[in-house]
Amino acid sequence: MVKFPSEQISDRSESYLESVAMPELSDSLIATKGTQPGVSVRRKRRMVKRDGLRALKQSGPAAALLLLCVGFSLATPKFATIENLQTLLETSAVPLLLAVGITFVVIQGSIDLSVEGITAAVSMSLSLLVANGVNTNNLGLTGVLIALLVGLIFGLGNGLIYVFGRLPSLIVTLGSWFVGLGLATLLFPQRLSQIRDRLVVDLALNRFWGLSPITYIALFVVAGAHILLKYTEFGRMTYAIGGDESVAQASGIKVWRYKVLAFCFSGLLAAVSGIFLTAQLGYGEANTGEGMLFPAISAAVVGGTLLSGGRGGAFQTTIGVLILAVLTNGMIQIGAGPYTRQIIEGAAIIVAVAAGNWHLRSKLRVVK
Image (cartoon, rainbow, N blue to C red; front, side):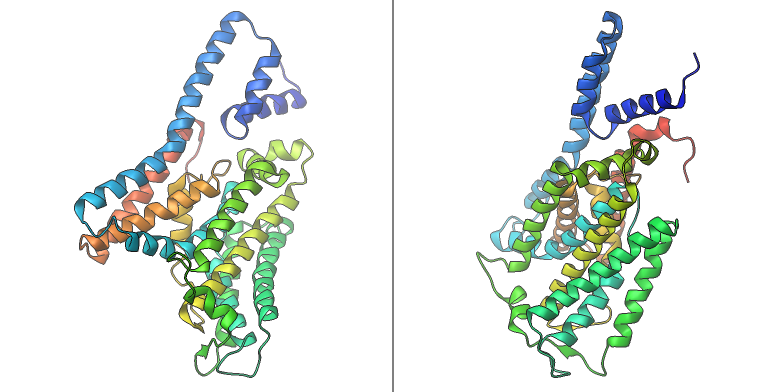
């Protein structure tokens, strides 16, 4: 029987709901359709199998993190200590912010490579606006807000160019990466711009229960990102766009708004990361954030966020960041060299991507 376009869209929407976006909606959809007894039994079996696979995929990264912690605890007594736990949390805070920001974009099926350029531009902007050792500026909190605005402008520009220029997000954000690095280099004075503003410096120096405010802010951002993705319209539309953008557009969703908003969140969190890195260093640097892009993307993927979009979340990304942090910290504790660490981390990323996309093999016509 020939299906009209509206019927095809409906079928695709149902398939998408069943497999990716909102399983609770798919269950109610199936329940209200009134299938025959034989079909109902088969569907129930498929639902049980699907739920089991979903639970396995969601718990896999957490189980891997637990196994790593147990393994390194048995391998070296220095790993399972309060001091080392505090070190793990401190070193994970800034990568976590970058990874959560990128997660918003990746869930939609896009990518953001500009975060290193944004952190560099924000670092130099902040160091020249607050009290410093190069000029007489002393804008305090206003300087911090302007630095955040720089990151937001970068994110907004990425989103608008990507949506209305109809260009690949990889190309747009790669160009923004170099723009940010160039801007940071132009702003860099003849000598290091040492930060003298106590508001900024105390972010890294103050300690509460052994942790700096940076760590607590990172945890607060993760909780906010989780609420945003799971319980708001923006979050629902983000998963819908990543699952099947054509279905989302056919449903009348203003896709471009949510895409631009995702890049704004990514740019804003990259700016926060740049401020925190500058506070930790104590001065502005044109290469602040160098080498943090691909670990952030890797953490999101290891935690369970699909590069093809439609699945992932803030908590999953947090687990991914902790997996890579524990892996690096534990290998240092047992005396593994830097090249050995790179090999193991690379292998872990490949295994995580393969495991996360294994169930999609039959659906992919072409792999590029």
